[in-house]
Image 1 (cartoon, rainbow, N blue to C red):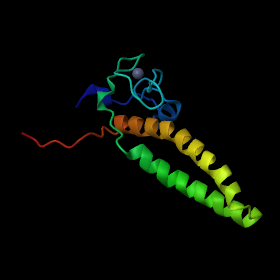
Image 2: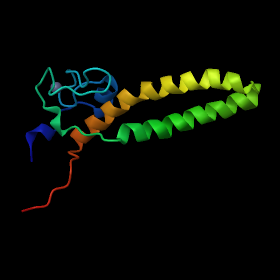
Image 3: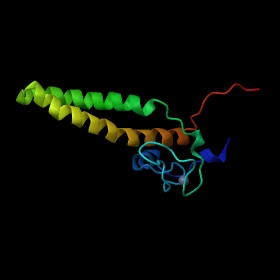
Image 4: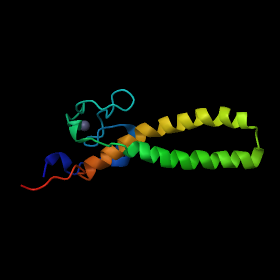
Length: 125
Ligand SMILES: [Zn+2]
Protein backbone atom coordinates (compact mmCIF):
# COMPACT_ATOMS: atom_id res chain seq x y z
CA UNK A 1 0.00 0.00 0.00
CA UNK A 2 1.30 3.40 -0.92
CA UNK A 3 2.10 5.77 1.91
CA UNK A 4 0.37 8.58 0.06
CA UNK A 5 -2.86 7.18 1.47
CA UNK A 6 -1.88 7.02 5.12
CA UNK A 7 -4.16 8.87 7.50
CA UNK A 8 -3.09 12.47 7.75
CA UNK A 9 -5.57 13.96 10.19
CA UNK A 10 -6.90 16.26 7.48
CA UNK A 11 -10.69 16.32 7.29
CA UNK A 12 -11.53 15.55 3.64
CA UNK A 13 -14.75 17.56 3.66
CA UNK A 14 -13.07 20.62 5.15
CA UNK A 15 -10.07 20.36 2.80
CA UNK A 16 -12.35 19.83 -0.18
CA UNK A 17 -14.63 22.74 0.65
CA UNK A 18 -11.63 25.05 1.08
CA UNK A 19 -9.95 23.74 -2.09
CA UNK A 20 -6.90 22.52 -0.18
CA UNK A 21 -4.63 19.51 -0.57
CA UNK A 22 -6.19 16.34 0.92
CA UNK A 23 -2.84 15.28 2.41
CA UNK A 24 -1.56 18.41 4.16
CA UNK A 25 -4.68 20.61 4.15
CA UNK A 26 -2.58 23.64 3.17
CA UNK A 27 -1.51 23.58 -0.48
CA UNK A 28 -3.88 24.66 -3.23
CA UNK A 29 -5.89 21.88 -4.85
CA UNK A 30 -6.92 23.97 -7.84
CA UNK A 31 -5.23 26.19 -10.36
CA UNK A 32 -7.85 28.24 -12.11
CA UNK A 33 -11.49 27.37 -11.55
CA UNK A 34 -11.49 23.56 -11.47
CA UNK A 35 -8.21 22.52 -13.08
CA UNK A 36 -5.68 20.67 -10.93
CA UNK A 37 -1.97 21.52 -10.76
CA UNK A 38 0.62 18.74 -11.13
CA UNK A 39 1.28 18.53 -7.40
CA UNK A 40 0.64 20.20 -4.07
CA UNK A 41 2.61 23.42 -3.63
CA UNK A 42 3.04 22.70 0.09
CA UNK A 43 3.75 18.97 0.53
CA UNK A 44 4.46 17.88 -3.06
CA UNK A 45 1.64 15.31 -3.24
CA UNK A 46 1.16 14.37 -6.89
CA UNK A 47 -2.42 14.95 -7.98
CA UNK A 48 -2.14 12.30 -10.70
CA UNK A 49 -4.36 10.01 -8.61
CA UNK A 50 -7.18 12.55 -8.69
CA UNK A 51 -9.95 11.63 -11.09
CA UNK A 52 -13.36 12.78 -9.98
CA UNK A 53 -14.78 12.19 -13.47
CA UNK A 54 -18.40 13.25 -13.79
CA UNK A 55 -19.01 12.94 -10.04
CA UNK A 56 -19.11 16.65 -9.19
CA UNK A 57 -21.45 17.42 -12.11
CA UNK A 58 -23.82 14.64 -11.05
CA UNK A 59 -24.02 15.98 -7.50
CA UNK A 60 -24.44 19.54 -8.79
CA UNK A 61 -27.31 18.40 -11.03
CA UNK A 62 -29.02 16.51 -8.21
CA UNK A 63 -28.54 19.09 -5.46
CA UNK A 64 -29.01 22.25 -7.52
CA UNK A 65 -31.96 20.70 -9.36
CA UNK A 66 -33.66 19.86 -6.08
CA UNK A 67 -32.92 23.28 -4.63
CA UNK A 68 -33.82 25.39 -7.66
CA UNK A 69 -36.97 23.51 -8.68
CA UNK A 70 -38.17 23.64 -5.07
CA UNK A 71 -37.45 27.36 -4.95
CA UNK A 72 -39.23 27.94 -8.27
CA UNK A 73 -42.33 26.09 -7.05
CA UNK A 74 -42.27 28.05 -3.81
CA UNK A 75 -41.98 31.41 -5.61
CA UNK A 76 -44.75 30.41 -8.01
CA UNK A 77 -47.06 29.39 -5.18
CA UNK A 78 -46.27 32.35 -2.95
CA UNK A 79 -46.10 35.21 -5.48
CA UNK A 80 -47.29 33.86 -8.86
CA UNK A 81 -44.93 36.13 -10.82
CA UNK A 82 -45.14 36.29 -14.64
CA UNK A 83 -43.05 33.81 -16.62
CA UNK A 84 -40.54 36.44 -17.76
CA UNK A 85 -39.77 37.26 -14.12
CA UNK A 86 -39.18 33.56 -13.38
CA UNK A 87 -36.70 33.49 -16.27
CA UNK A 88 -34.96 36.70 -15.18
CA UNK A 89 -34.60 35.43 -11.61
CA UNK A 90 -33.92 31.75 -12.02
CA UNK A 91 -31.65 31.47 -15.07
CA UNK A 92 -28.86 33.58 -13.53
CA UNK A 93 -29.51 32.20 -10.04
CA UNK A 94 -29.28 28.62 -11.33
CA UNK A 95 -25.99 29.39 -13.09
CA UNK A 96 -24.58 30.97 -9.93
CA UNK A 97 -25.68 28.07 -7.73
CA UNK A 98 -24.35 25.41 -10.13
CA UNK A 99 -20.99 27.09 -10.70
CA UNK A 100 -20.71 27.87 -7.00
CA UNK A 101 -21.23 24.23 -6.03
CA UNK A 102 -18.95 22.71 -8.68
CA UNK A 103 -15.56 23.55 -7.20
CA UNK A 104 -16.32 22.62 -3.56
CA UNK A 105 -17.93 19.35 -4.65
CA UNK A 106 -14.97 18.49 -6.86
CA UNK A 107 -12.67 19.25 -3.94
CA UNK A 108 -14.66 17.03 -1.59
CA UNK A 109 -14.75 14.15 -4.07
CA UNK A 110 -10.99 14.32 -4.68
CA UNK A 111 -10.29 14.52 -0.94
CA UNK A 112 -12.58 11.54 -0.31
CA UNK A 113 -10.94 9.66 -3.19
CA UNK A 114 -7.58 10.27 -1.52
CA UNK A 115 -8.82 9.34 1.94
CA UNK A 116 -10.61 6.17 0.81
CA UNK A 117 -7.88 5.05 -1.60
CA UNK A 118 -10.40 4.96 -4.44
CA UNK A 119 -8.81 4.13 -7.77
CA UNK A 120 -9.41 2.05 -10.85
CA UNK A 121 -9.65 -1.68 -10.27
CA UNK A 122 -6.67 -3.73 -11.46
CA UNK A 123 -6.36 -7.42 -12.23
CA UNK A 124 -3.75 -9.23 -10.15
CA UNK A 125 -0.89 -10.80 -12.10
ZN1 LIG B 1 -0.28 19.05 0.28
